[in-house]
Length: 58
Image 1 (tube, rainbow, N blue to C red):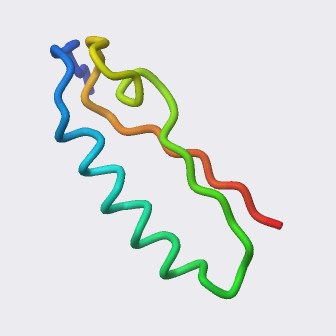
Image 2 (cartoon, rainbow, N blue to C red):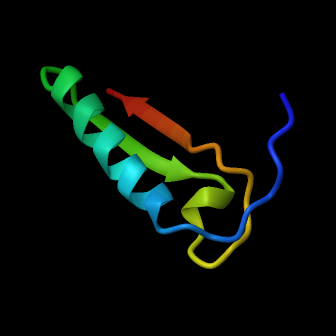
């Protein structure tokens, strides 16, 4: 699957925020950290519209 680069879109952050909330709910009993990484996390940067997420667990 080829994803073309797109101009920065603030919806990417909103989508991540929603996913982060869901993950925190699922992982509630576990101490965790959920970070938005990659090019869609950088405001103003063109990127492939694919949200990268890093999850850390203790």
